[in-house]
Image (cartoon, one colour):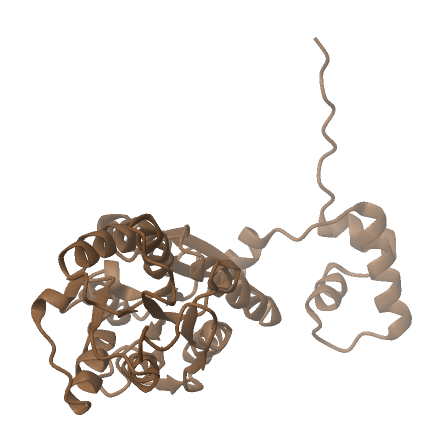
Amino acid sequence: MSSKHFTPAATIREVAEDAGVSVMTVSNVLRGRGRVGEETRRRVLDAVQRQGYRPNLTARALVERKAPTLALMLSCITNPFYPEFTLAANLCALKHERHLLVCNTDHEADRGTTFLQQVAGSLSDGVLVANYGDLPIEDLRALQRRGIPVVISVWELPDEPPGIACVTFDAKGAARIAVKHLIELGHRRIGAIIGSPKNGIHSARLAGYREVMREAKIRRVAADERFTEDSYDGGYQAATDLLSSRPDLTALFVSNDLPALGVLNAASDLGYAVPSDLSVVSITDIVPASQSRPGLTTVAIPTAELAEKGIDLLIDLMNGKATDTTVVHTSPPELVIRGSTAAPAGS
C-alpha cells in the first residue's frame, strides 16, 4: 500500500522570513493596505509564490469579526434560472472580495430555516435570498432583528415592498407584455398556466394576465386557468389537463419559462402544432428558451442585473449605506419573439 506525503501549508510568518519583512507588512501587501513600496511588495508576492502560501480565511474572520463569505439561498438549483443568477451573483461578489455559500432549499422551507440559523452571522456576514417563495418571510425579519443584513432579490411586487431590503422587477408588467403580444396577434381564446398557487409567488403574473384580458374585453373563465408547480413536469401536466378539457384554446400564457418548456412538449404529444395550432408565451428568458424547438417567445427579465444589484445592495447594507427597507428597481422586462407564437389559424 502506498502512502501519500502531505506538505504542511506555509504560514504567514514563513513568508515574512523569506521576504525579509514583518508579518504586518505581508498582511498589508495581501490585503492592499498600508504604505508598502513597490520593491517590497514584489518581494513579498514572490515569497508568497515560492512558499505556496494561502491565507487562512477562517482565522481572518475570527480576528476581524468579518466573514469572507455571503450566503445565497436558492429555491431549486435544477431550474436553469438559478445557475444563471448564481453565476452573475458570484462574479459580483468576487469584485467585493467575497465568496458565496449557496444553499439550495429544493422548495423545503425547513431546509432554508436551518441554513439561516447555522450560517447567517457566523459563516457569512449577510444573506441574499434569490427568491423568498419557499421561506417564511418572518424568518428573514427575525434575522434583521438579530442585526444580520438580509436582501431579497427577484421581488415581484414593486409597489408592495416586503419591509426587507430588496431588488425588484415588474412581474405584473412582464405578464401584461406577454398577454398583449398574444392579443395583438389576434388571439381571443387564451388560457393561463401559473407556476404557483393563486396567491403564491407568481400572483403578480396572474394579475397581469387577468388585467389585460379584462381591458381587452375578452371573456375569461376559471376553467381556462391551471395552477401548478414551477417546473417542467408541472407545466407538462397542467397543459395536458388544460388542453384536453379546453381544446378550443388557441394560445397559452405560462408564468415562467421552465413550465412553458413542459407545455411545448405536452402540446406536441397531444397533436398540437406550435405555433399554427397553439401559441405559447412565457416570462424570464432562460437559456433553454432559445434552444427549444420551436424557440420560446418570452418576456425577458434582467436576471444578471437582479443578481448584481442584489449583491451590491447587500454590501451597502453591511456598510451602512442602505437600510432594511431600501428598494432597488431594475430595468423593465422586454419581449423576445421566437417561434412559439403566431396569429391564430384562419385569422
